[in-house]
Image (tube, rainbow, N blue to C red; front, side):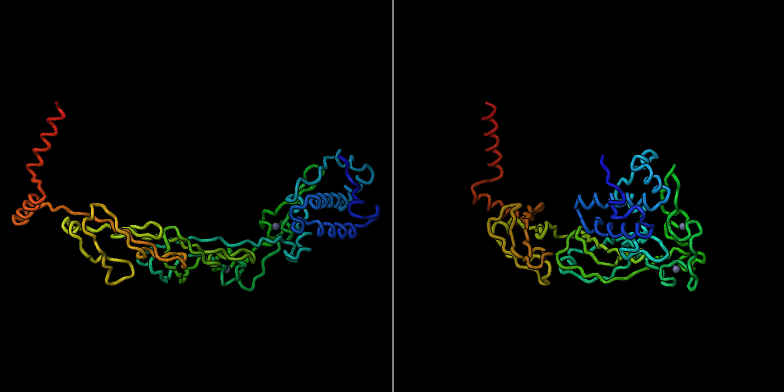
Length: 372
Ligand SMILES: [Zn+2]
Ligand SMILES: [Zn+2]
């Protein structure tokens, strides 16, 4: 593969000094940085090319080999350039940090990270889900320690510069001819070590605290509805934003109403006489103290369903009207009859022209016919 001259890539003369090389590389890296050129393949190539040129020219040993033997000279000694962005950033991380304005003067790498989000499961009754409610919930979360402001060091004590990496957060490891820098394991890349840990958090910088928060549950929530409370999760690390708190709703089963999205379903027992003659009965309805008067039309059949519009569940989408209520009529046949009821039913049967015994005789005739 054809490779451009490293000096040409960085727009330098062959006798440029270290400072000029760095300055020139910074300028190009800024211009072609992937954050500024998302999805731009050409910028990506230029960025990688500049990184490779800089990697070689900044080190006198590699530069000398390149000056004398060119690209082949380096390849012959195992130099392959960078595999990708990851590689470039882990090698020149410090350069990017100071010109993109993050990181700090101790040379430690920025680790700003968003705090963890938390989940809280909240059980509500169907009535509460219908009306909505305000509830105080209490939960535990990790927060930056108030005593040391999350630093982990005893107040007044300064963290110690890590002796292993001298505060760089990175250590250089030799691999054959080349050197690779990796995060320092003694300080986990932080560049500093806590010498006098804070008593309250034992140096961790975080404490577990009990938190009480008011939660507004809107009308119409259902099992699985989630309320997101921004910033109420655990605190972020190194200046990162806090996580969120997700309140997950569970609606308890109701003795009388079942729910299907915004509709409610219930069953009411009705005597066979009420079903036959029709009646007006009062049934419970959510949000109405006195209940609702329901008309059972005469001739209502067992398991018939009567729809009551607008008496179902409130809708979580506030602009939508309430759902409907579906009343399933459960016609009850009496198991015990008084003598008077028996006589009346007997008379009713005769009026209908059907007596239980004559019906039995009809069945007998029918079966006889079938057998012939
Ligand atoms: Zn502390
Ligand atoms: Zn270290």
